[in-house]
Length: 429
Image (cartoon, rainbow, N blue to C red; front, side, top):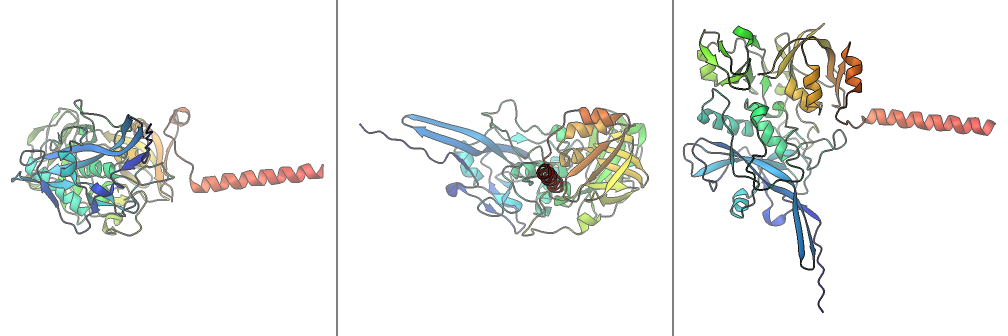
């Protein structure tokens, strides 16, 4: 009788798979691959495939299950025979270090039918041409600074970092795509990962792509326009936000209709023809002082940008702003806080990501609410409700945040002191 028992490595990933291992791309070049997916010209497509799995062999039984997936983008131009690959991975072969532009053998994976779903077309933001959108995605990929720690698995505020899925969603958001328009798993998916696509809900900050939001300008019928600026201060795009499907007038009285999310985007030349943006905003400090591919990256990536009285500044560690929410634009995902320092425009989506609690942020950033927003020196977020919302917010379930190191040290010190005092008192008795 021949009894064979084979138990290979319980879990593995494409980062560790030597036969299909990718490599970092640090020279700023575009990675061009054959268009195996038969995508049409001027297309941006999202592709998902297995990335982490486990396998178990016992006699005749073989069990294999995908745990988490990997997302990447494909961008075609006028010549659709090839596509630009937009994806990210770890700088070091052991899966550590910065999160950097990367190239896996995606054509080989596709030929082996290792895909979770067919390429999903990402429509350009309403108002943009496919040609401009595709080039914008390529440009943001090239502008990425690599100052973000890579983590295959993140435990908030203990193992802080972001992964390849964070990168892909971050690229799209930096190009003006509304997060509500991104569907990570289509209905006709071939199969689904146990944990989905870890990191996709925690996108890389816009600042890591050199992107910052300018000062908003109020338009007619409750609509507002805001510019996406690049690292040199140039206008990348202008987005108008208002009520869903609303018809409104631009600065030059042109009538336009917003999409179902209350948005419309304009390429720089188109925006300029309509007299937008209403004002220019100079690059803030955290954009001007970006580091390119540092050996020791920031754990949480770039800082959130806000606009204080028309000036773009970073929401830097140790700073906090308290005030009353006096305006909100869901089309643009921004809220205006009236503080003693001035009018402070904050990005609701970015804060929801940084605070790891988008539902709570959305609830508190309602007109009339009094609150404080900031981040501690270790990048641990802080959002405090005041007034009537204080107790309701405290009693509402929220996402778990591991205690900050300083709080842990203080608690341990207090506990040790209490035990010491107890021992001394017990001996005296």
